[in-house]
Image (tube, rainbow, N blue to C red; front, top):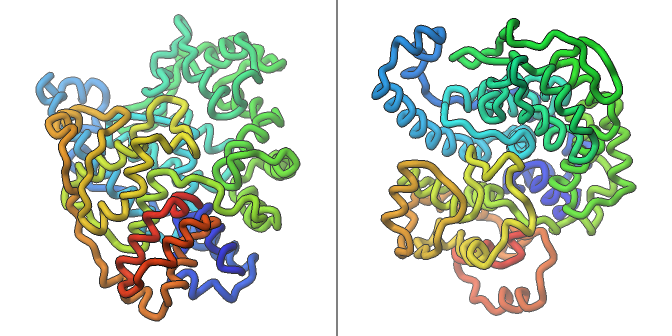
Length: 463
C-alpha cells in the first residue's frame, strides 16, 4: 500500500501509523493489511483496574447494601468511586496508545459517542465500557440489547424508574432518536408503547440485569405497525427490521470513519451491506477494503478529536502525566473528557472541536507535552467535584503540565529515517504552501525539535 493510504487507514481505524507498523505493512496489499488489522482485534481483552475494595459491597443484595452503609460511608464510597474513574480514564488512554487491537479500541471510542452514558459508579462504568469493547465489532442487535440491560445506561436514562404504573419514556425515546433510527422516524405513540415494553427492567448492585416481573407491563403493545406482547428485546428486533436503522448507523459510521460530508451513493452501498446481517465487523471490513475509501477526497479531511490528537502524540513519543489530574484537565480544556460526555447526544465532532480557545491549545499541545510549554487557557465543559474545586483555585493562572517523556524511544524508532520521511509519517493531509515554506526554512539539526514543529502545524490537526 502507498504510505498515505496506510496512514489514512491507520488514522481512521486506529490512532495513527507508527514506525513499527509502517515497516511491517509497507509491502503488503490492501487486503493483507486490513486482514491483519482485524486479526489483531479478534481477541477481546477487557480493560480493568483494581476494584477489589468495592467487591464485597457490590456483591451484596439491595438490603445488604443498604444495611452495610451509613450515610457517611455511602458518601465515602462515592468519593472513592470518582477517584477510580480518573484511574480508569488514564487506563483507557493508555490502552488506546499501546494496544495492538487498535481497531477494537477505535470502535470502542466511537460507540461511546453513540451509546452515550455517564455514571459515577466505577464498578458499573467499567462494565459498560467493556460492553462497548466486547460488542464493538459484533452483531449490532446483540449490542443494543446488552447496552439496554446495563446498569449504567439504566441509571443514565431512567429506565430503572420505568414501571407499568408510571412508564418513563426517556430510554425508549433515546433508543430510537440516538441509538437506532434517528429523529423523525417514529411517532410519539411508538415511544409510549416501547416504554411499556421496557417497564420493570432493572439491575442488581453488582450490575447484572434482572426483570422486576410485577413492575413489567405484560399487556399487548402496538409498535411501528406491529401488535403483540412485546418486551424490550422484541422492540429492538422490530427496530432492526427497519432499513432506516441500518442507514442511520451507517451514516454515523460514514461521518466518523470516512468523511464528515456524506456521499449518498456510498452510504446507500454500505447500508445494503449492513442491513443484510447487522454485523459491524463485516461492515467495517467492507469499508476499509473499498477503493473509494482511499479516494483523495477522503484523506486528511477530518479534524482529529482531542483524544485522537492526544493519543496520536503519545504513540510517537511516550508521555506519562506525573499528575493524573492534569491529564483530565487537558481533556477538559480541549472539550472531550473520557467517561464524561456533555449530554446524551455526546460530543459533536469535526469542526465543533475547534474554537478560538481550543485551536491555540491544540497547536501548542505538542510543545506543552514534550517541551514544557506554559498553558494559559481556561477549561470548557463540565467536570465533577474535587477536580472542579482543584482547578477553580488555579483558573486563569499560567501553569506547566508536568510530564515524563521517553525521547529515547522516539530516537530509536526514527534513527534510520530522514527528516523528510519523518514528515511523511506524521502528516497525511495536504500541506499548505505557506506551511511548506515555513518547514523548508527550518534549520534541521534535531529530529526531536522537528517532530514538535510538525505536530504544531495546522495540518497535524487533520487525519
